Length: 80
Image 1 (cartoon, rainbow, N blue to C red):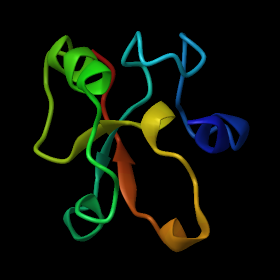
Image 2 (cartoon, one colour):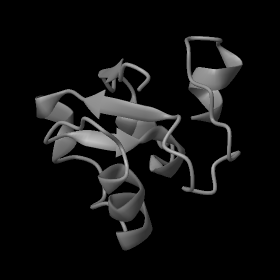
Image 3 (cartoon, helix red, strand yellow):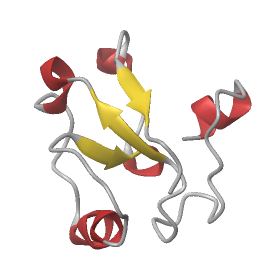
Image 4 (spheres, one colour):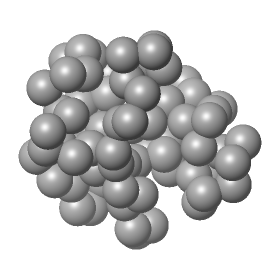
């Protein structure tokens, strides 16, 4: 989330990464979805509060950057 926010690509990140607001909702490309760690219960709960999610929806604040994610493809979710 911080990388996306710093590059001003449209992520709000209102809660500052505390997995509380859903304003950093992204849809991860199918080929990358299995390469990310499973979402924790808090993330699943926050996603469940959103009006529209996809099978590969994630909160970008919960995707911890690592070199093996170089090339990660995702789409910014539309704001509700």
